[in-house]
Length: 138
Image 1: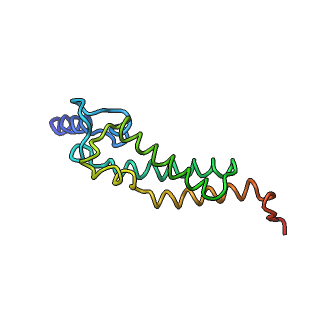
Image 2: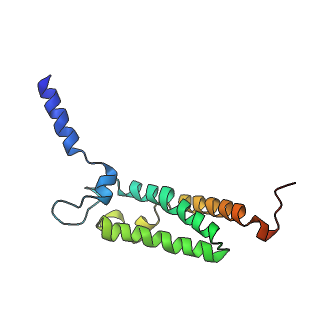
């Protein structure tokens, strides 16, 4: 039993969280991460975009209030810039091993776009309904 506990402790020490690998640790030898070393990067980018970027930026655009293509265009630019900066400065990945820039920038783009639109429309409607002549007190 004591040998099993020692091997379990070694496995726990060797396992590193995906989020720790993405935002805290760099590769051991200073080289960029490749797809073989960090195969979960696309999952991390998907969830960062869907959980963090899209709803927060949607609430900001709804509160400001930004309308039309200015809001959609600014979301595309800001979302792509944040993902690009995460890949090139924080995580330092080898972009070619993941399929290029568009593969990384496109990960979760449509799903997060829908969440952005939902949070943008809801926030705008709730905060600025009197501007548009909506009357919720019927």
